[in-house]
Image (cartoon, rainbow over the protein chains, first blue to last red):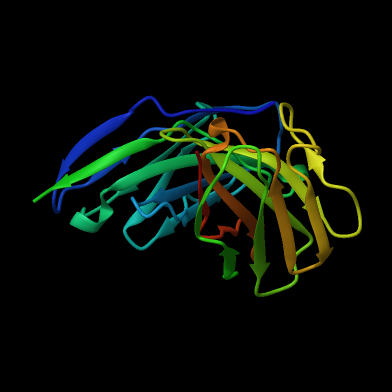
Length: 115
Length: 114
């Protein structure tokens, strides 16, 4: 079974600054995928970034980057140059490849960007 | 990316009734997933819907309460049966995109049971 832990229930960040959201995971699978999603107050789940367990380079997508440390089983999300629109819940999730993107989610981190 | 739509977007239902939620994907996908998000909580997988076979339910979820249909590769329904206030949640469907690592969600159905 997989387990995802997000230890930061909430955090403030100043507009234009960078913020790191922590995510650690536990799995016995050798091949797996790690995902980050953003959920604004509207409730939709917005896919941000993906990291495969065998990917040698850290994933990046625009202002989002994933700091993947496989040995430590961590997959932290870095948001650079925060914007007011980044205020939302952020969820880390993982899927064993064999499960075909059946996701297990962490508890989430609420981010509030201050002007 | 896959575009996923859900109907209804929200509903208020009476205790003891049932609601069927529809999920439509703009491309053919092998597996679709249904999740529940209770108020203030994270997402929990209800079941995996495969075309042509019965859905696979996660621990704590049963077919009598959450029957699922998957008549083709672009469509699925989830029924919440004999509802109680504890069923008040956001229900989301999900499907993969064409590339490895792509997993998208519908906009969700916000259900309130009174």
